[in-house]
Image 1: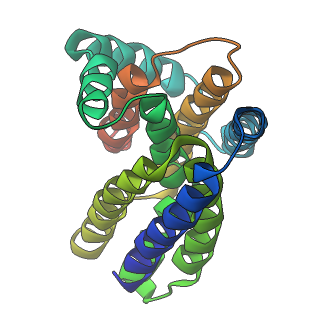
Image 2: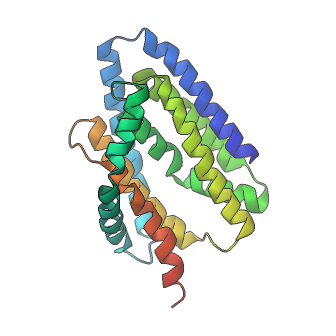
Length: 225
């Protein structure tokens, strides 16, 4: 868990630095940073999908995942619950920024492969690299949305900690196929966040979040046949 702790620490440090930048930043600078983040999120999302689509053994699974996960997420209305929760503690666009931060920090090859490498090989290279990238990203996010971005560190700890535990205790539970399908769906969600930041199309990304559970459930079942 050393790598995950480092990753979380970098997000917290970056958020604190970004908070001081946010305090004296003019609205026009905040706007251009938001647009830059939107473009970056779209590129990261598209890259994740393109890189992993060719290695997918179940090319229609991402469609099923988005449909089933989206329906479930809409049924319990995760987006509204999340917005209401964040709204109790902060105003503005923090909910959107925090949702984008969680997706950027958690859904990526380094964030998924890092805990696996740490659990199986005691290799923290991926997590240390991911931590540096997340630290820089958190500076930009916090300079735009405020210190509340630091709350994403909790999600990162839970996410990476869960993957680490699964990889450690059930070493065969996570494989290349699952990572491919998970990253494809995650890439699409990151792309959707980018569209929202750029004000091209407002998508209830959090209501689509349960889509990430579908590959985790379905891939092991398909591999039985």
